[in-house]
Length: 119
Image (cartoon, rainbow, N blue to C red):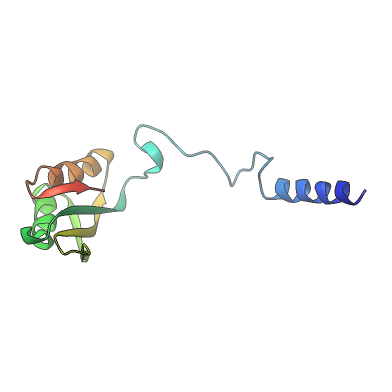
């Protein structure tokens, strides 16, 4: 009898947390064409570019994005060197008004010969 009572309490608790109910505050993610994969536009997004430490990417990354017409939030630019110091990652935030602008940011950085990856 004791285990049955505990089971009922657990089920009731899970139901109040929304595990069993269709709750209005726990809607499925919007996957419209403009809001694909949880992105909401317009918005501010982060991007990270990785490449050789000798390539001066701290300057090149914001420059390439600005050249592509992307609004860069320059106060958010940060860098981090790899443990051996051969590579560097540049992280910054940018404004995108559409999925096309978001994709253009990644394309602009991937076109740079010294940038190996973007995240």
